[in-house]
Image (cartoon, rainbow, N blue to C red; front, side, top):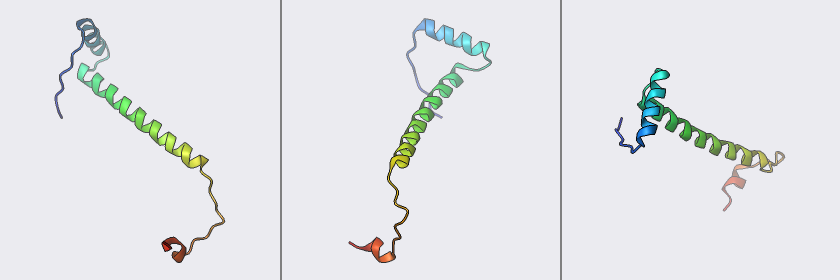
Length: 73
């Protein structure tokens, strides 16, 4: 795991430390949880967009492909 240096205003840092203490966690864990949730949210949004695109695509189920059809150039 890598260490990262952040610049955080003193009042925000103090309130964040107090919040972490009250919730039996660490400031480190809070930052990791936040970053993880943001990354997963963006990934989920991308998956939802892909599924919407797949749902909107026209599908022809009556087409039967032969091996020759697939390899025609």
